Image 1 (tube, rainbow, N blue to C red):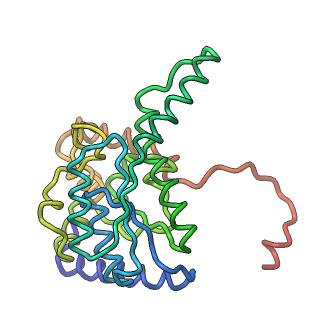
Image 2: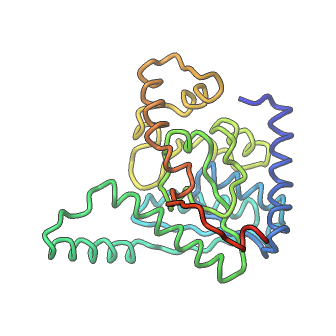
Image 3: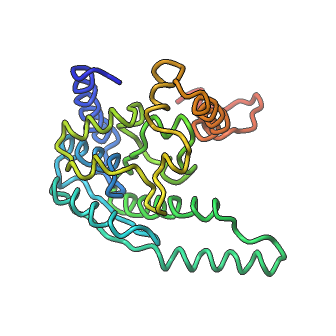
Length: 260
């Protein structure tokens, strides 16, 4: 983990980077999904410091999810004085799942499995955020940390999608430290990281600890050999989530690229 001096320096640089990036693309502000967790809370704190509270819109999007997360999201919004929209996606999601399964059943195709249904929810949420952002002339600010990315604990085109991400190069412990530095409520920071879609924490679902992922990032090793194998396996299998979309290429003249 970064030492305290470097951590605060990089946090301040990231905050300035938010301001510069938003100004560079002439956006009017940012939209942030407010889950009531440490990552989104820290990003909200950073964005408010960079842009001012009036230019930060947060959106809570319960989707058959844990009710406590909504009250935590309100706590974060109140702490930083930002507007929070509450958009319950549960009914819309249920209808979409029902409609898809009905067509699959009619065509004698197996019904959606549990993993696909879990991943539909963050994609649905990101659709919501982008719709609001485009309407307002805002950018969607990402909230995924480095540890999640390295083991693919993200949904492709869901929570991994954004216009820019100020915490993408910080580990979980570093995000927590930045959150503390920026006065994120303690009850948010001590809460076990979870996607809010079930009773298990992120670490329970993965079978590995974020501290072990951070240790692998920082040293290339971790004391738990079983965790090390699992982290390496997840890192390799999730490379496609960190890469640009593969495109078929052949050599051709393209005046737009060459001239402009």
